[in-house]
Every structure is written in structure tokens, then in C-alpha cells.
Length: 463
Ligand SMILES: Cc1cc2nc3c(=O)[nH]c(=O)nc-3n(C[C@H](O)[C@H](O)[C@H](O)COP(=O)(O)OP(=O)(O)OC[C@H]3O[C@@H](n4cnc5c(N)ncnc54)[C@H](O)[C@@H]3O)c2cc1C
Image 1 (cartoon, helix red, strand yellow):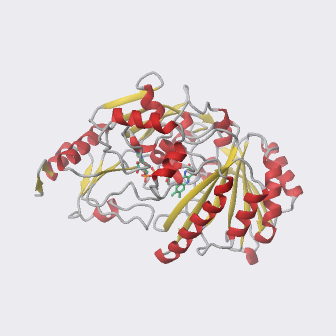
Image 2 (image 1 turned 90 degrees about the vertical axis):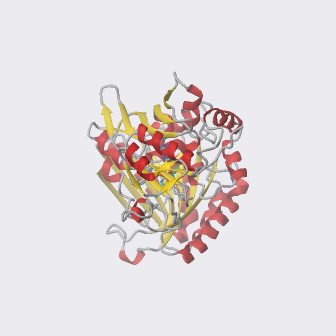
Image 3 (image 1 turned 60 degrees about the vertical axis):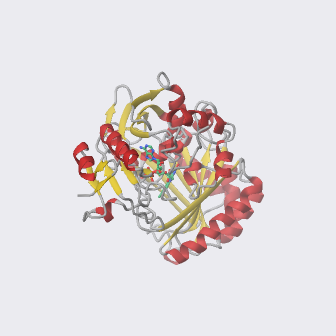
């Protein structure tokens, strides 16, 4: 039995309904695994919690043992913050239950649920929460930092659709924060990341979506990149709210709808998904297509749940990853020139530029209503997403990603970017991302986590 200062690991095991892993356990290597192969962490303890009470027990043990704490939901943080060498991981992957109240259009999801869990439960009622693009992403990190994806133009970000959270704060209290109770805390968790405690349950407002949606994929070769991005820019302002816009600089997928000779060739894609009247989507695609006929035009109806997992394989676990981001008001000629010039600089075929159009519902949220760092003006948010099969290729594409961000800096709305796309903890960028909201967040942090127990995140220092 391992016996240390604050009690034994056996006592933690006895106190928790969930499972506890240490390096002696055969499943330890599986339990400590994170999505990003570049983040290889060896915690002393992985506490797979199955309730808020388990979380309280795990935090108490970490405090008694002086262990650094990490919190894990879907394990997708590219920075690897949800693991910790020699510390304790509060692993929420045992808390993935989702319950739906279709009458009141509300869903409650465990703090360890994945987007695909939420989609499966809500779509059974023709409802959905706006989340992100990849089904195996955790709702925890995603929602707490913002959460942009397929439904952002229609219904805002994940954090905009929170009704309440159940949260275990640093002193072990279990709180239910909402607009009515602990309102400052509720404000802070909607964008302020995992700084304020462990969220054991998210309660979301639901929207009517699907079950079928319209998927549109238009692709132009890199040589026509400038014209393509200009055509997309002109089209975006005319598109109905029901059409979501993602623009990607990537290699053409080796899919049946892409001519074989263009498989894996670089270019720019417009992913136009329609969540309303299919005719509206058809007209939107036709408008873009007429402006600049694409090399590939693939349009098909698809279940919303299939869309939610369409990019899962390309983003599979076990690859090396790095990401950073920039947000800017317009797809100006200068921005387009950067993207076109930089597309050819990638080393790994999976590395990409992924740009989300943020407007409509995103822009209708009062900028001060949540802690989300960034303006609510219509804008674009570009992820420079490096994904590589090995560490060496990752090194090259990490430099590439930073270079693209730096080239976009003169046109960016702020020097911080989106906190959920920060693979590095650079304090000046965190402050820049939150702008005026940083000081209020630091005061709330001082109230709920004065000792900065929850610091393995995009950290806000207690005031
Ligand atoms: C393949 C991929 C696709 C992505 N797509 C999108 C996208 O479409 N849109 C978008 O906005 N972002 C996207 N992201 C970024 C994503 O939002 C962040 O990486 C996010 O942190 C992932 O959340 P997670 O729960 O999976 O991560 P984890 O690594 O489990 O957690 C990250 C951090 O969040 C905090 N945290 C997580 N859960 C909790 C909780 N329940 N309580 C308290 N703190 C918690 C902790 O601080 C933790 O360190 C994507 C990332 C990847 C890797």
C-alpha cells in the first residue's frame, strides 16, 4: 500500500465510487492518455470520478498530498494541460450522461461528456446544442472557453447557451451557478475556461435542428486560392443565417467526390452547411458556384449526427498537434494574400488553416453578458492547426503555424486570439484575449480559487 502524508491511495479508492489509477495499475497508460501525442504526461494519480462527491474526494486527496491538479474532460486541449506529471488528474470521462427535457428545451450533460454524447441524446428529440466540429471533443474545455462550430451563426457559441452549471470549487463546495445564483461565477465560467472549479454538470438551452441538414463542400485548387477567397468573401455577407460558413485551407480529401488526380492536392474549401430550408441552401451554393466555379462541388443531405462525426477520423487520437489562432474583422486582400502565400509552407498533409465565420447569433449576444474573450462584432476566426504523424514534422508545422499567426497579426482584432486555440501559455496573449474582462475574471478567481489550484488551463491569476 502506498502511504504518504495525507492518507493512502487506498483511502482515496475507498472514498470514491469511480476508479483510481496509479502507475502500478495495468490500465494506467490508457487512463493517462491525452488526444495530442505531443503531450505525454505521467500523473501520480488519475481519479476517474463518477459524481461531484468523487471530485470533492479527489481534490481533498490532492490537497492533502500537495499534488498539482489537472482536470480532464475530452482530453483535447492541445497544450496537454489536462494531464500533469506527478500530479492528480480529475478525470471526468466517467461522467458522460446526458438527459434531455424536450418540453423545456433543456439538456443536462455530465462534466466529462463529449460532443457526440450530447448530439446523440439531443437529436433523439430533434434538438441540439451549438458545439464544435469534431465529435470526440469534450464539452468541458470547449464550452468553458467558448465553443464555436456548425451552429454558431444560428444559435451562438456553446457558452452562450448555458443555463447553469454544477461546479465543485477549490474549497470543496458543490455549487449550482446560474444567472440567479453565484451570478459572477456563472459569468466567469462562460468563457473564462477551467479557472474557477470543476464543472460536474452543464445545463444547456436547446435549439431545433435536423434531423437532416444540408452539407456543401466546394473546393478550389491552390492556384485559384486568391479568387476563391475573394468569391467567398463576397458571398458570405449575402448568405442566410441558416447557412454556416467554415473556410479551410487544406489538402483535398481522398474522397470519392474529389477527382483522383486532385486527392491530397492543396487548395481552399468552403464548407457550407444548411440548417434551414434546403432550397435556401441550394441557392446559396449556386450563388458561390456561379461566382467562381469550383473544382469540386459536393452537396448532399446528411443527418446532423453524421455531420457531427464527419471530421472525427481526420482528427483521430494519437497524432502530434499544435494550434494557435487569429481573429480579424474582414477577409481583406491582405489577409487573403497571407493565407494563399502560407498554404504551401505546410509539411504535414493534415495541417490546415480553418476559418470560422462568426456573425448573426454570435454577434447578437451582449459582449458583456459572458466572460468570453473577444468582440462580438462580425469577424473571422482562423485556427492554424498543425497535425503531424511524428514529432519532427510537428516541429516544422509548429513553426509554420506561429509564422502564419504572426503574419496575420497586423490585421488581427487582438494579440490574443481564441483561448481554446492556445497551445501555449503565454500570459500576454491571455490578457490580450480577455482585454477589459481580465481584471474582473481575476477578482472572481480570487474569490473562488485564491490559491490557484486550477492553474493547468489558460490561467487567470487571482487578483
Ligand atoms: C480535434 C479538435 C477539434 C476542435 N474543434 C473545435 C471547434 O470546432 N470549436 C472550438 O471552439 N474549439 C475546438 N477545439 C478546441 C477545443 O475547444 C479545446 O481544445 C478544448 O479545450 C477541448 O476540450 P476538452 O474537454 O476535450 O479538453 P480537455 O483537455 O479535457 O480539457 C481542457 C481544459 O479545459 C478545462 N476543463 C475541461 N473540462 C472541464 C470541466 N468539466 N470542468 C472544469 N474544467 C474543465 C481544464 O482546464 C482542462 O485543462 C478543437 C480541438 C481539437 C483537438
